[in-house]
Length: 348
Image 1: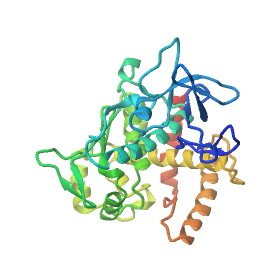
Image 2 (image 1 turned 180 degrees about the vertical axis):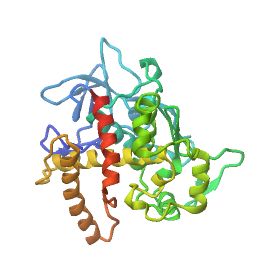
Image 3 (image 1 turned 60 degrees about the vertical axis):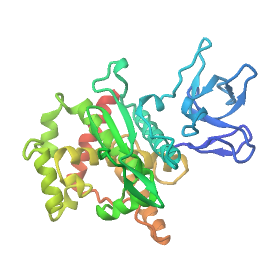
Image 4 (image 1 turned 45 degrees about the vertical axis):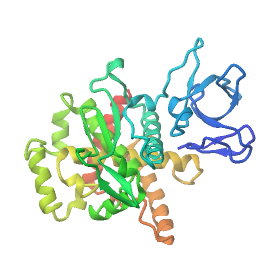
């Protein structure tokens, strides 16, 4: 993740809506693809103040109306889209009449914007049905429970909302944006990490299985990850929640959940690959020494190991969990190589 510069010279970050030094409103300009300071226009809207841009802009509807976004849309021939290039993928958003849901929605959108930043960095295809994508990508942020005095109580008559993916549609349960609830689930599920960005990276892995593997590259997938029909997904899920992962799973899987079924193994490996790309991009732009690399997987993994070792030790000094709990074994390296090949073929 890059950092940016305000017109006053102060550093701006990806999630900023204001410059804390000079007070300028800021946002993501689609004209120059950066967080930029904004100037209000007399006729309405804004002008990007970056010296090489000057685009005429409007705030995304979710920025202007709900303050859950920080992106703008370009005004072309006097017209502009209502939603930005991230928010346009939403099918269902949280019920904002419920206290706390706007803040949770904002956290979900912030994670989603980081997901799209990495997908665009890799030049991975994604789009809607109108753009001819099969499956089309979309998101729903829904709740099956309501916050009550720090706890979550079931909503009478509602069906349980499962975080997951089906046919290009990604659903995230709103309570995952509650830090306390998410940590409780992380401990209950014995997960080393459980984060919002982790959910998005995992579920988008399922989307890219449908987009890049299904009906196209399934033989190569089976050679690396196994046969998804033996056992079936339902059988594998039942076995996993009854018996847990097999003994010695860290030698072959990036997480315990990856050991459940080949589809989950692919999604977890894909998410880990996005972790690697995102961490290296941020480390590079923050000036970490010794982590420059080319596009080859061995060089990427070597650089990631250097960043991971440093970050893990820093976290331990502060009593925090490791930033990088995964150990890349030969089997995991082969799985990452498969994802790496798919990504580069798709980016073309």
